[in-house]
Length: 91
Image (cartoon, rainbow, N blue to C red; front, side, top):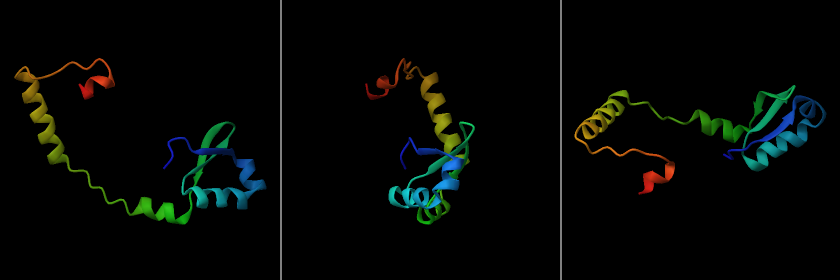
C-alpha cells in the first residue's frame, strides 16, 4: 500500500463514484474520503479488503517479553548504545 493515499472529499464520491471505485481497483490502494478536510472514510477494492482480512498475524506476547528482557540484560551489561538518529541503527 502506498503510504500517501489518494484523498478526495466525500462529495467527489457522490459525484463520481464509478471513477473513485475504479481508482481503488486499479491501484489496489485505499482512497481516503474527507469531510470538511478531515478523513471520514476509506474506500477499498474487494481484493485489497480481503487481503487485509486474511492478515493472520498473531501477537506473541511471550516472545516479545523475552526479547525485551534480553535487551534489558544487554543494556545492564553495558552493551547498550545511545541512538541519536535512525542512521545510528546501521552503524
